[in-house]
Length: 191
Figure 1 (spheres, rainbow, N blue to C red):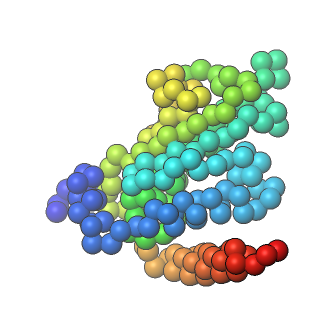
Figure 2 (cartoon, rainbow, N blue to C red):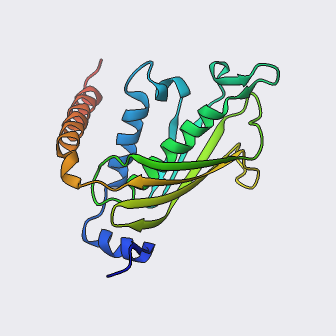
Figure 3 (cartoon, rainbow, N blue to C red):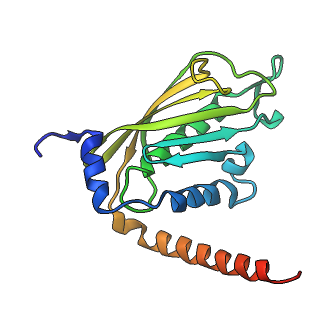
């Protein structure tokens, strides 16, 4: 293939050889978003809503700490940017053959309107193309109706060598196995 980019059909053919475990990716996303009290993910309250092949949804509940306009109570645009960037980064990871992280290369955000104070903001992202080293994504932030967008994003994410993430995968999988053992041990006890 001499073309610099491949369509999603080529990605699906490649993934037929080795399928990414989407349940594992969901757990990985959730552990990153909730694993470190006080980091920007927990401060933002980001939560994965769904993870599918080439599609990811996330949410960010309203939080007064994130207000950007004290008069209106609207969430700051940088919090919305972080939601969109995170959602696009995780959807890019669904285009990989194995669990890994996809760093942001470039992200463009168009703000259409202010978020409504008091309401959760949702983001839905999709992969729309894959090149040898770049995964192309787009996303929209909204309050539950994609047609009433708060902001839209287009992002490019790095597809790095899988071997760079061997230690991360091993540590995550070991941690998950221990959690499963602890959970199963707790289910059978009367405590």
